[in-house]
Length: 221
Image 1 (cartoon, rainbow, N blue to C red):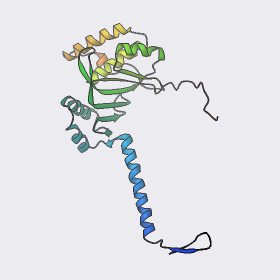
Image 2: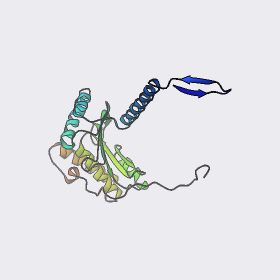
Image 3: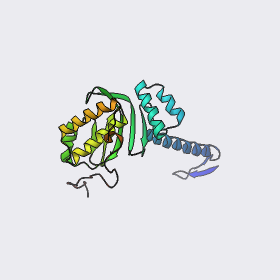
């Protein structure tokens, strides 16, 4: 029992054993559970084999096939949700995301985009328009200093990013890059290879990213 003195000098006896301890333990468990749920929300469920396979059972056939190819190459994904699988620091990539949802894309021929892969690349702002004109599924991120390509095959992402780097470096025009992409993609589907689809032809190391410059002060500073 615990004595608590209220205003006016009134003393009240309050039971503190058992109940209070149970409430404290319950609150700690609730906080731990909420924290764990928040972490899982941020990263998706950890990619155990059972989780991955149960998720993929509900996916379209093409995405399931691509998932199995990526798992054989890079192992189980780090993050798993019902809408995506995520690998980080896998092979040459900063991140690989395989989406359940596919986006129709007609360049250079009709297909579906559902696997996006990221690598470091410093893209100057004056090259963004050229990259958008080259391929609408190539996405530079100036602030983070990364660029991604989204297609249905990893070799086509490699091809798109190699050509994007050529554009950034001034080695190819947009028209030249699109023509080369179309020819190389067609050759690839016929069993012919090219250095442009085998690996990234530029260094993905070093510091990239542009945090820009402040032009205003925070209120109160």
